[in-house]
Image (cartoon, rainbow, N blue to C red; front, side):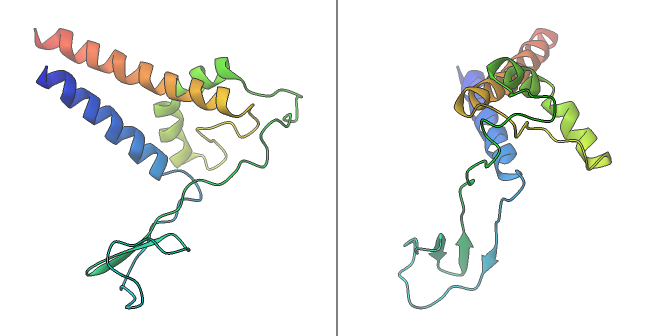
Length: 136
C-alpha cells in the first residue's frame, strides 16, 4: 500500500513539474510588498509569504486550438495519447532541436489534453510495472 501511495505521489509530482516547465510559465521570487497580508493572493497572481513574494500564473488559452495545421489536420485524442507516450523522447529532442515540441498546438482542446495525460500516465504505469517486476 505504501508503495502505491509513493508511486501515486511521484506521478502527481512529475505531472506538476511537466506542467510547470511548459512554455510561457512564469515563476519569480521577489521581495514581499508591505501592502498585502501574508498568504493573501493579489489581483496580479502574487502570493506574499513572509520573506518572499511568489508570482503564480495559470496557462493561458491556446489561440491555435481547433485550427488546422499546414496539412489540414487537427490533433485529437488519439494523437494526444501518442504524443503523451513519446513525450519523454520529444522532451530530450527539444533540448537539441529547438523546432521540436512536446505538445501539438493545433489540437481540438480538452480531448487532446485528456489523451496527452493518458499517454503520459501510460508511460509511468509501464515504468512502474517494469521496475516492480525486476525487484521481485
